[in-house]
Amino acid sequence: MNRIFTKIAFALLLSTLAFSQLQAQFTTAFAKNVNPGQQSGFYYSLPQTMIQLDFVLEEADCEPGPLANYASTYFGEVEVIEYAAKSYKILDVKMKTVATPDPHATFFVTVGSARGGNKAVFDILPNGIIRSVGSGAALSSESESQPETMNTISADGSSSIARKRGFVKLMTSGKTDAQLAREAADKIAEIRKAKMNLLGFYETAYLPETFKEMYAKLETMEEDYMSLFLGNRNARTIVKSVYVIPSKDVTTQTVAKFSEREGISAGTSGSGSPITVQTLSLNGTAAINAPSQSAVESMSYENRLFYRVPETANVKVSFKNEVLLEERLTVNQLGVLLMVPFTNTMMEFDTSTGQIINFKMQ
Image (cartoon, rainbow, N blue to C red):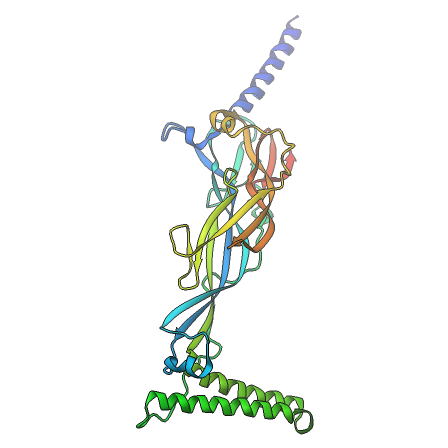
């Protein structure tokens, strides 16, 4: 009888110890429900997707020509630079994703005493995004997954002006602007005639390489003299970066404005026409029966951690009803939050999505 009683008592003791060990690990709660200074623990976040748009722009310094008033007299209806200004043109746009802590998926872990057994060891990046959790030891940092990125131009990169065009020097001594305009127009007529003559002799007189070189020089001379009337545009390439965080509630967001005179200004307060980003979920996670956001925020969970199954979305960048860029991207916050129990396990999270990518039972 005593032997049976001893066995039962020992079994109950083991059960009690196991239960105590399970309960003593940690409790996870949504961050906003934590009272500052009243609990011992730490915060961790799952990553959200921030989209970086790098707009490649042509920025040009526009300078009116000294003979602009005579342009229509000699060349009819032509486009003339009337005053000094800058002008901008969108050449290209590139897209990449950046993982940042998600305020809607930030949690507080209350630490228990963890008496007996292996303790839960958390590995968190400096920005607060969780990387791994293990029983007794953290996972090696060598296994950290790298965020998905795309090749892009540096946000502060710019290219120098290929050829800074100045104005042709004219012999101005004792001459009026009208006389100078007449001389410049005559010179342009001579250059154009020389181009026509060169075309007529091309097949018999010149090798192709020689012809191209001579014709290019005449083209440059004509452009230089025409700039006296039309003005100069000295252009360079610059890159302007704009950032947007896609939302489940707002599928189309105005992220910047663009005007030919001021370029790109981030946000909605600048001048010009809006640049919009539309993010449409492909509903790849629709079949997952996940807890609602209100359930996630209102309850606390013992020995459980949140992870995320990200969503794929179609992302479209538009300007004046024209699609500048359209790509499919992984957008974390459009996905779902789920819970995983922690009982003598080791698990690794993708720090760019919040998904579990490695799970090991101890």
